[in-house]
Image 1 (tube, helix red, strand yellow):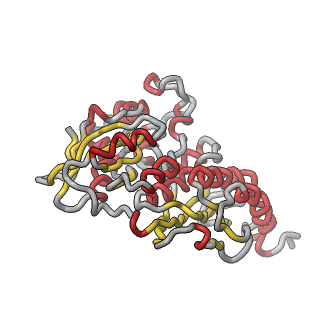
Image 2 (image 1 turned 90 degrees about the horizontal axis):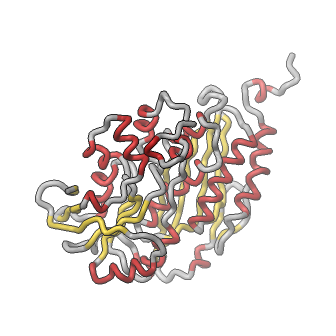
Image 3 (image 1 turned 30 degrees about the horizontal axis):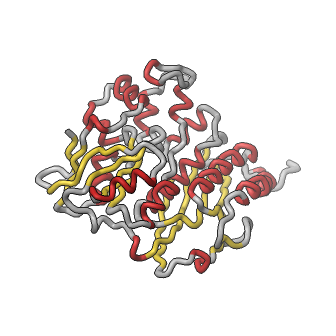
Length: 340
């Protein structure tokens, strides 16, 4: 008879689970913010909404995962940035609705608890929360042998933010004549990786392709998703933005119309989009149709703002970064997005 207990014999290491919790506490502590209550280990995370000083608070939530980008993190044995991707996918969605992220919870499922590896993942989550000004107030780690392989894990998250009711961005203020301002992406972000993996399936990741300006392929593919919260919140608080589109899966074609009423469309000037080298490489090596690239990827623009022309100068003044004027809002005739 084995000395292991019955649960251990089934593949679940309870002690490793306890170690994971202890390892991640210091990372969660980095994300402390006003309103966050308690610590990790309880049955529920707590947040005191009265600490936000919002007069007419509306809670806005978002949930997402990282998708098959996780498979590259596992392939290249690099786990310290993928958590930021998870946070970004959630908080960028809720900032697009006008909400300041308050708190975040993560969920990690794995075939075998490896405390050092999972600590790296959660360290990335904590870094994302710091960048978003969001508290990491809880989460869950599940060891699921048989569901996942020993080297596999999945990662998802859930964010809650608050918006002043009068500052909610729902697209209702977007109008014909508004200009479209683009904020740069950091890379592919966290979408389209089923295609990315197919294009680069035969590569080790150590390659330095001519298009990638001296960077290793694996570093470019695992570049974490940019978090736009701190850049955009001041614009929202000054009521400078009429609409926001987070460019995720579906690229420009699917996401820009999400901030438009049915009678409006977006006209985008392709030559104003700062296409990143990785997208040129993907199009070349994957033999992807040029038009299709805009239906899949962000192409170098991770967030699109619809703004009144007279407010553009103030927005550029507040944003300490390049801002790209990539198009305008027009009356819809056929397509919701026209790229010319």
